Length: 110
Length: 427
Image (tube, rainbow over all chains, first blue to last red):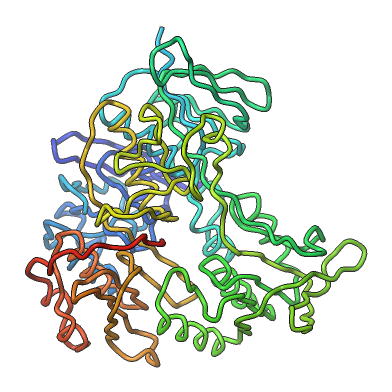
């Protein structure tokens, strides 16, 4: 197993889920495998369904960076409440620099 | 004491029934029993990332082992349910299942999520070594091992699985020929413009494609395949064959229960079988068209497995939700990303956006000017726009959709023309 990093998910009711994540995994896969509700990820990380939408916390947004082109298209059309920090969590790979990454889960996925 | 819910089939649908039951507040026991030894995992990457060496079983697992324990989902692995019966004296829907290993699993409620098995090719030589199918992890692991040393790969079946494997094999430098019995590729899933595009695109990538070609047999030496014989007499050298010619839904248990089956377990929009106390979900089912409610379709997709399983869980808890869901599919064949939304069956008009020669285009399908579906190749924005429109019951005017410079999302609007009666649809 790779090194661990912590990811904190906050659901729409304000509940926090702090999960140990493996560097190299995605923020989506880490949430799904650990049963964090609200990240559906039907397509399994293929950037095809837009059901793993999260809002990245302001402090981490610059580290995480902007969406890629394909993701941009899905965010544009596919999510209900797009914000400047919106990302598809299947497209965020966990690095050591993201230890403590906090993301919010929108109340609904498409 | 309550026996709770028995879910037969450790599939995507099976896991989703369990997860949804818990999310809906069910606290009674849940047993999820699967024939495979692996905890439930994603299957779509088996023909893509897994063959390319970019994914392993661990990374495909849906949940951590702790999740099952924490959620009090009893995951029973390596046990094949061979018998199931409903109680004639107990509460309706209750009964008992038995596994091949002799284990008894009593239940108050039953969900069948048994999936489908790969259809075998009944021709001489079909049992030779080196002839592979792809449905489960063990199949994929075997295929990947054999691909590492293969020279001439023949893929029988030009559907999603066949073409995904062909792309992976070609990327590994193998000589690859696809043999398809129909006159075009992916005939069950996409329109003819897209089929022809894929034929040419795969040819450009060095994959041979033979259409309207039936396999009459396999030749071999010392128990191992050496060639594929076509019905016109052509012989193709092959040291590895992948057969991807569709699936057969597993209906044996449903038939034991006397449930109505018609190329799948027949369910209604609430995932109820012909015995309303028993639900079924996923590839093993046939259901009314999910948008129009008409006809009977079998939808083999992740999206359907998840949506139907969610409905099934609600039904088990006595909640009959009225849910319409837009079917969607994807098939990534190397750098060609095909995304489909809706069901095009019964279309009378198609609109092509963009130029297939650019390897970036989409085809929208209409019936009586009402949008039915899209096949999008490397145009995810088009796909998402159509998925959204269909989900909202909105239309996209066909005459304007043809202009690839107009974003489709700017054209989504207005309710569709009246829904015409859809004939018996095929997925």
